[in-house]
Image (cartoon, rainbow, N blue to C red; front, side):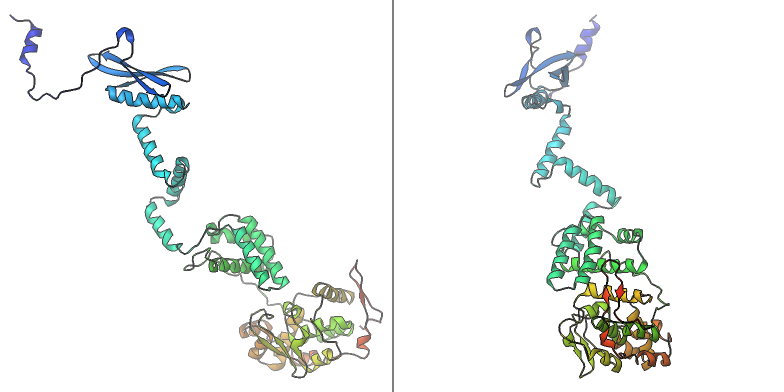
Length: 450
């Protein structure tokens, strides 16, 4: 009888289409490597190992003072990895050889794709992860296409402080008034300090939250919002923002301010102010009280616009707040106040000192000086006199609805007659009060009329 081993060997025939395989290198003599992977002066030995009838090839090298071994099923795979390890050793980068072959291939492919952009791999991955987090389940490609459609006309991305500086410089070159420039600078510089980043990254809710966090009155907050709206409109006109959609500031509404209680002077109070006023303060008081012109408009007014023969004051478009030409009639009593004055140059030569002197005069007479009191008084008495909101709106540069809503029936026609009958007193032009620099008080050389 044949031995079991021989029988088993003779009952299994060799397949007729056996694929030829490359010869397996023999074991190195006395434990020597069967191959060496070299790069420059660095070399990594490759050993042949037999285990359970299977042939393996091992790389042997050191990293961080420890001997490491990697096993492969083919000599070619071992040589390929050995050359990479030798290259890293030669370049002093042995610490990154812990990447697996497929991980290293992915790494090299990613670096190749990014090479033409100049973006480091780590930066690209970080940017992708941020975008992925913001996009949620949406397609990043679809979102990028939509972004490109919306912002294709944006010439460049700009930081808010940069656009603010550019806008203020242009406004100054265009001849904007000092008061307007101060308002823009105060508001926009604070806005730029709070939001120093890209202008397209500020949204409506951030602007609203910032304005509400400020310890300012409602009218001040509205004024700041108007400046910010102007700023965003400018940015859009300069292609810093897309021109086919609303800006972040446009979506915010001006808050409603209750102005039912208008502070106005009585005819008696106004007469005391004028009759105790020196000649250089008469233009501010008389024109403000009897023409309704805004103080900002008065500060820009030249005497050449005051025509006593035709009895009109002509505000050019660049002087009026509304940006449109306005003609204001000169009443008889206003003409009586203006005729004796020297009318050359600006009506208010020194805005700061003259308005400070008016406040000091009111304080010396113990008269409170509410904001815009002269304009409010004129409109109230004028509508009581002419009975037409449309006419007063044209003269005051306001809308008829505002005139009708806030100024109607605040006074009587009899009081209006007294208001427009205030004329200079005897010895009016002899008043020579001076303003103390320290306490800003008015010291009159004449007796104050009560």
